[in-house]
Image 1 (cartoon, rainbow, N blue to C red):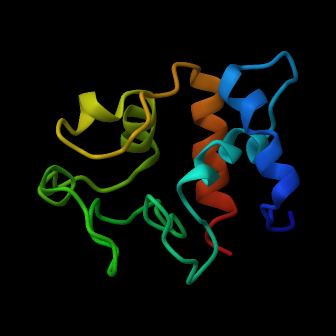
Image 2: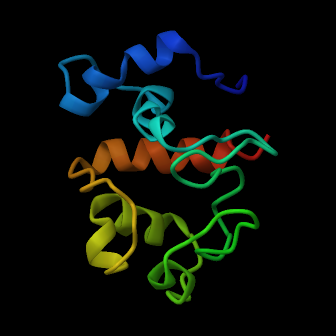
Length: 124
C-alpha cells in the first residue's frame, strides 16, 4: 500500500469525516480528521498536536520538540492499539488534564481504521 499524502482535497473531506457522513470511510478517510492537528510522515513538522509518525509502541508525551501537558508526560502510557483505542474514544477519560482538543470518536470501526492506518502507514 502506498503512503497516503494529505492535500487540500483530503482536508476538504474533513467535514464529511467529522460529521459521520453516509460514505463508508476507509483508513485514510478516518485519519483525515486527525490531519487537522497532526502530521504523520517521518520528520514531519508539528502542528497544534505532535507528529504521529511511529506512534504505535512509543511512550506518551515523549516526542522531542513538542510541549506536552504534564498529564500526558506523566501518564506512563505506551501507545498500543488498546491504549490508542481508549484515548481516541475519550482522550479526557484516559488521560485527564491532557490538552487534546478533541472530544473523542465514539465509532469503534472508525477508531480501528485510524489505529490500523497509524500502525501500518505512519511508519513508512
